[in-house]
Length: 368
Image 1 (tube, one colour):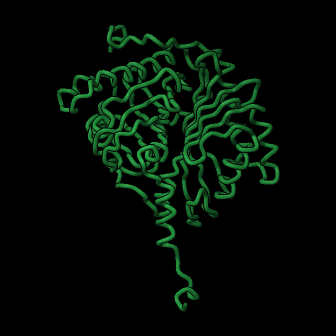
Image 2 (cartoon, rainbow, N blue to C red; image 1 turned 30 degrees about the horizontal axis):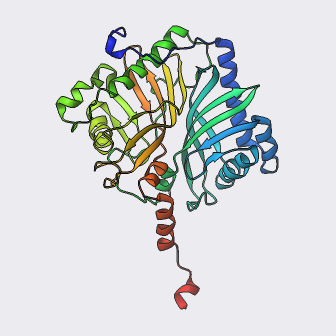
Image 3 (cartoon, rainbow, N blue to C red; image 1 turned 135 degrees about the horizontal axis):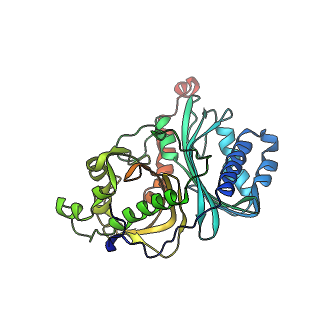
């Protein structure tokens, strides 16, 4: 694809070259920070959180945790409940990529927490069995500590693993996300800035092509005009969040996500604020927005919810692997519970109700 075509030019973005030694050191620091928090004894967890996070850190976590404005809240409302829920937890990073965006050092991480689900978490009942909890993160470092974070936990997928599903069936395949096929997602070697630049610009040109949609019913002709085939590998893997599921190839992506999404949100578009990460690191790229993507819910066929007419803001990240010519794999952390809440559906409320209906009945209760 010729990146110089006028229609794909990116007017509001310029790749920032990075000092590769600093970039690798920042990624190593984030890996060490997260492992320190995950492995610290619970009695020392507060101290570990204070050692990792800046005094005025801002931490944003997917619903129902949401915005945490001090280190005590980060400890008490996020890390401590996670550690109590999974006492033997291990963190498995699948992708760790770094770069600079808007003059900030940024690191994106994606992977799974693996452990035995021993105690409930946010009302999700413990299964006493092994679970894999998807996470995705965007971290900004300042003065050697984490100053700002965006953390995506796929709570819907955790509900699915313990046998509760508070919404319509997914169109795509619900499955554990695969690691990059090349097994090189944890990028600890210096990368060429030119390769990194091409990766993030390839992704942003694909984003621009998505904007070619004019709000008309997504017929074959309309979809072809968006020229997605110019940007994706023919057999690309698209790993969607719980509620949407995983798809393969352009047809799978269109049938199970893109068409339902366009029908439901024909006026979707970005705002001037909300982007928190846009980086390229070798053949990988990471983007993310916290309320950046906004739309009016006016159509059927997305997450099983009829049109509400409500204006919604979406929290989403994307992790991409490119092959030098196209996008080959795309992992999509998406705060589906927060989106559904804006559409009038409280999945946590539904889950609590479902759990009450199906909880085990004791012998004494039967005898009453």
